[in-house]
Length: 190
Image (tube, rainbow, N blue to C red):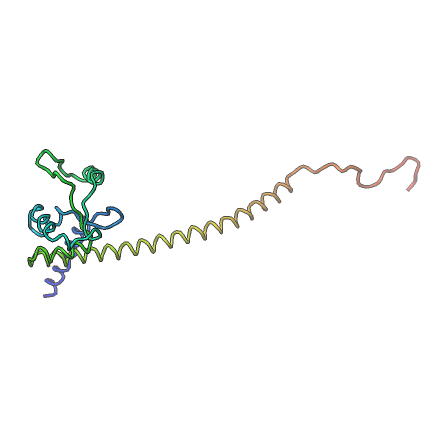
């Protein structure tokens, strides 16, 4: 029984990991492509898009948007996506934010859509958790850099003083303007 629970947990972790790879950052938002979502929901992309278009009021601009041609070309260059005219996409894909994905389960109305949405929400939560730990690490590194910079400034000044003192010690003695000591004149008896 414990092995089954352990195996289920590892499968869920694998599923979450696979989902995280499908989450992209576009316009500083974490989004998923319509074709990736359609694949996960087990429907054709055109069916997903059709359902979204029939329910546009549920998908405001902060839930879903269409990629610009430039964004789509950038996406095609980063990933293997067929170009239009060869049986591939003719329009730029729709991308869905976390809230848009949550809304999809109500539009698609299937048990699979609900189950997939739950896993996608878990993936988004995990990404936020990881991003938070990266942010904390970045802040710590910035603070360490400031601390080390301050210490190096102190050490630099101390080293300058040491080198100055060493230069004074090894510099040839300066000639005195007047000789030090006294002169003995001839004829004076001491």
